[in-house]
Length: 251
Length: 288
Ligand SMILES: Nc1ncnc2c1ncn2[C@@H]1O[C@H](COP(=O)(O)OP(=O)(O)OP(=O)(O)O)[C@@H](O)[C@H]1O
Ligand SMILES: [Mg+2]
Image (cartoon, rainbow over all chains, first blue to last red; front, side, top):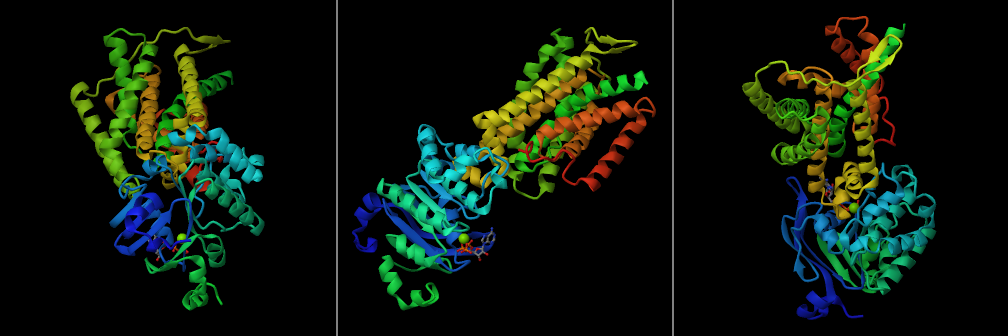
């Protein structure tokens, strides 16, 4: 597989990179968290972001999705500048972020949460198919569709969060902490599904605490440290680097 | 004995209207954590619209309901953009001050135009007589209309796309944006609905009691009591809270002078706040 960084830039921007983040700076109040972070999510690939607690992974995703306003830098999606589009407009273009900490609509039922996931016009038409798909993926949610989301167990809530993201019929699915709180067997099923979705053309950008897992399943990976990309490359290359083995893989 | 029972029943009828008034307040609070201090002014606006349309144009008082509802909605949307939009997510004092300012302006203009004269809208409806007691037709119809509108609000919030989007925004605005809900528009619509409810409740109260431009404050205060009884941000609870308040008024009015009613109600308000900080009917089911 070719290294994204080695491709010629014209080809990368349109045909290859669905999402491009260039020199992103963002923060909270006076505190700057991101210091010129750049990354790409290649179309049809699974790109992983790893990094220590507080490195700025969640902040990156929130700035990219529009939950917080980027200070400087550029976010392009399908070749268009979307840096300052509000989140809901990005969702309408096929952008789905499964946020850290689930962020469910707690006093609404599971079914209503999924329905809200398909709020945008592009998703509304495929609602029934998508619902079948997520219920096949998470049969537990089908059993509990009338239950209020806030009363589900932690793992069930994570399932709703991911299912809600899938309901929006996204072109790119961005997940912050995929495996958090899920039993290994559920993580395994989920990965199998993500693989299927990827083969069907979905682009995936994943933040994952479990670096072993992230490197095992991604096509390309970034290591974030102190608000910047510290290292990037093919998972096998990264796994071979002594700094990564020591700091992130505990080897 | 029967007199007390009759007083209680009448209290419940009026309480349903109070519940409707509080629904608008609690809806706006539930969706965006803003206490809308123009609520009293909007109730009075509903009363004045009733008076002007019914007395000046000669329309039947109850036919003023649709224009008040629709007009109230647009006034609410305007209120959102003028006084609330920039305050959402800021410290609560900001929106309290901005809506309070609008309230003062509205009451000031109203006083300049109409003074503080007492207005009365005649409603001639046959009452229902049980034994020696006659329940006024206006009270019964106002209670029925309040209950119907409250039921419609419930259906709107639980069975329509926009209503569900409102509940989603109330739960988690950031997540609502992420799934594609234009949350700013939803906030504006919520204030529109909240003010429409205030206007309609004012219109209905106007068919029950005489009023002045300054009557709004008292009803706004009752709205707070009802909200505390019913649970913050819980429109279904608000209706129950209204009934509870009406029940209480029905029980005390035969025994104490009118001026003591508010004192007793606010003593209750404080007691409830101490005993049930989230409201008595604060079930998760009814919450937005
Ligand atoms: N809402 C906020 N207000 C102020 N500072 C924040 C906020 N959210 C995050 N931060 C700070 O920004 C920095 C980066 O946080 P971020 O959540 O992006 O880290 P992360 O890489 O996702 O970490 P984790 O792996 O623990 O989820 C941290 O120092 C954090 O304290
Ligand atoms: Mg994080």
